Image (cartoon, rainbow, N blue to C red; front, side, top):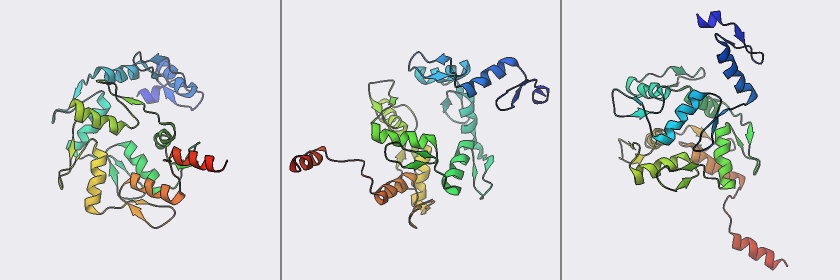
Length: 248
């Protein structure tokens, strides 16, 4: 009924809202305005509720608890997604194949990586192209050496979120391990465990654009493509200095 009775319309995209404050908040997504700032890390948000949820990352508060296991979450949305682990519900179905997913983001990644060759995001350092902004941001850290993920228990910083999760598990006993039922190897995230099990099953869904080789993990394909492009991200500064001296 709120949808049908909505009277506040966005001039930019035509979306309607039942209340004026909803429209005001929505307009910030077009203007880029983020008035709510985290006092701990400086990250900014368009809505106060988003800042409230974010603050739980720093405080460690996890008020949403699963009734079937001991997992707890920062917000209700993550609990809803987690509950599908127990129910097996996969409401997001691919229109091009028979795969289904428990999260809409997983479906979007599947369509990008499996059914599309579109790579609109290019690295300004080396020109390599990526399907998503997130993939590009992670890649750029190879060039810049940035380490945006910091441990709240100590001074350690990391370039990747999974490195931080491993650190928290090993040194601070925070988080949960995911264990392979075949070889008992442990992983700090479910996605890595899934990729690992695909190695046992011989599933190679990542295909190289330049040759017929296939890989079971995205990082293996990335390494293979780096070799093909002859891109060398690691170089010896002494060898470079020696060549400069010999040419003088």
